[in-house]
Image (cartoon, rainbow, N blue to C red; front, top):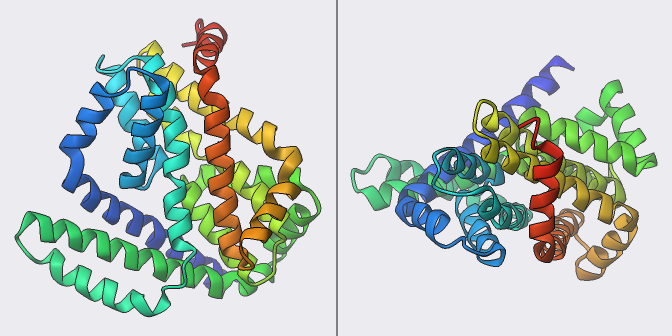
Length: 309
């Protein structure tokens, strides 16, 4: 049991390391443009959402974009109201990685790692960062392969077996499990990747997997909340907005988990790809539904957390 948990922890570490290395490469190639976009092109919620989607797709982490956004708000470079659109966009942009890791690219792992490692030893700025991107991708696919291979051994452990059984029986427990797991490892993408492995081994139902992914959207807010501690009022409001937007989204779509599953099953027969598609559908619809209500949400946050912030 200890060996299985250790291997599982190692694969989580490899996944997060791969995300970080890839993010560094992508950020270094475009960081000047990212700062420009965040500060100058967010004068409306829609523009903010487009920018948030674009930057999150580059950085492959909604949490990273939220931390940057909160930092800019704290520095007076952005306002709280400007951040609403960005937050909506982060939820969409982060689904790109989920879609990507659903592909079966096992044969590409070794070439990605080797080419990436070679380029990492070059002195050229562009080739070094391309190497970081390729090596990071290789690590992601190594971790995904590991999650799938460890799914059955993990499910034999009593506490994991009980958790899976309970989430299969209750979507509400699935949401709670996704929230908790993501709050611990601080990556909704990693949580989704783990559940994809369990889905491919038929250990969790699609409805349970969707519920866990919905919960992951709430759990990922913990990073931005921690980043806002000690910051000014507006930075804290942005963190609260991130939390409330995801909670409202989950509450809205929770009754339609089965319908989301039916749509995903219509689109593809592959369980892990179904989950990736649901993640995209949920986040895109949630963000577009919330977009016209951005002003009302800002007022709600300021009224609810005005004193506490």
